[in-house]
Length: 221
Image (cartoon, rainbow, N blue to C red; front, top):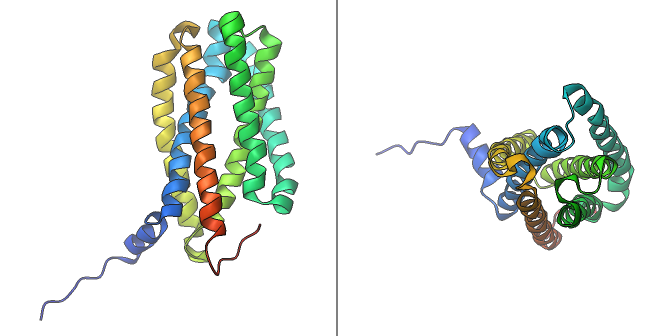
């Protein structure tokens, strides 16, 4: 009699993590946000201040303090809120801040060009973007943990999330560097960012209804 080979346990674990509708949506969002964060990391945290405002490397390093402030405040703001309100209510804060910053930057770009009205405004946009990104990153990891097939698959779920973010980041880096063109392509890049966030909002809405309609599932909200 022919013997049926069993798939290795690690392969079964990967299948159980990625072969579900919820996981596919979560990892799709990871890829999109990876593309987003990599592209704005290149643009707003580096070449924007160098090409448009004439900053040197030391000056850009000082501006990066806004990144640190945004990530720290995003972390400490989200932590108590997510324990109280859950992932999906807190996503209003993270996506709202990022989308608001991108839309504001696009309107100001149409009015003033790549300077968007001055360096102070640019630093504020930078702060809000990183505040929103850090908030998203935390809530998305918790979403991965909550929707892992079992407790033993949580680390694999987080690893796949990181892989998808990194994969998206490669595309975002190429996209940003190709479209920037000394600041002339900033409007198109902002539109791509806005579209990415809108798509992720739709994905989170779908995940909310899918996970809240699952029977016999323990949820935090």
